[in-house]
Length: 220
Image: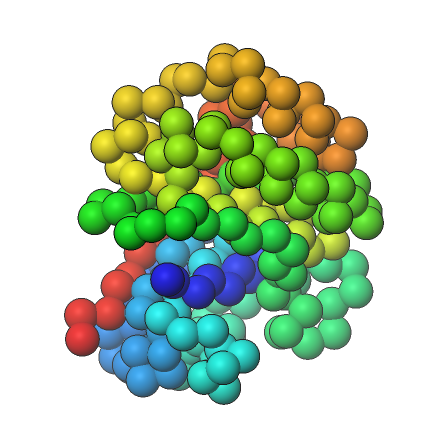
């Protein structure tokens, strides 16, 4: 089981090539794995910066809550491009999204998985309603039909982040099956609570997917 923390900020559009190399340098020059970090993904979505930190152990148990040995240096170097998102931001911990739902099926994990990051806006206070919709769906057959091996839902201010982990082989075979009645039912039930991040440019499911621009994985 991989534990994930999600950081959400604003990012100047088009600055991925400025931010990614900063992490590339420090992930090589320092050892995030000494803080329990086994992986890192940076993604962008419109003007959002999404930073997914992966660990083998829950930070609440390990006590290792830091994800960057050179946090201050990195923060200074990416400051021209990455800024806080929440209106209530006072310190860096306010950029950490709150996990409000997690589901994984029983049984062994697939040998090869892919992670998709879906972004939207969430109605304030609707986390329990969104969790209920997914809990009801995840109790049925749809997740297994789509090869879902894990689901994590997060919110921060009015931003909704959905990490969807799938068996790679099944996901590729099913990636165009968003017309399934069960899938359409979930989308309909979510509609009062979840909306596109940028409705004026949204044309379909693909417009809700964040784009990964940097990935690091510990080798030891």
